[in-house]
Length: 137
Image (cartoon, rainbow, N blue to C red):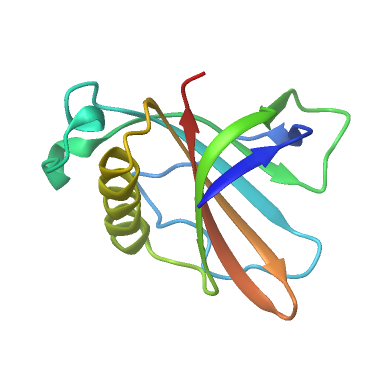
């Protein structure tokens, strides 16, 4: 679905060691994580992207609650393709979901930017994984 985010979601920057650990599996109340990835330029425009080449580098990661000591990162205000699942998805699970999101978005003739935001939060008693893909204006 399309989502018009009216205000940015702000987080405290932190360094996530993605090569040594999977993304957060234990999400508790009042805790959130945001990860921003650059997508491979060619794969990010393909209706049939190659899974192993799709995801580019992690650009930044953030967490809540916010701390005045760390720098800030955000999910900017704007229009996004949006999808969520009510669980803390593993990397391979949300990566498959991101590819399906891209296929649906391209099928509907949306112009997508090569940034993918992955947000983990706790909502209504359950962990939630959300994917945001920026739409070009």
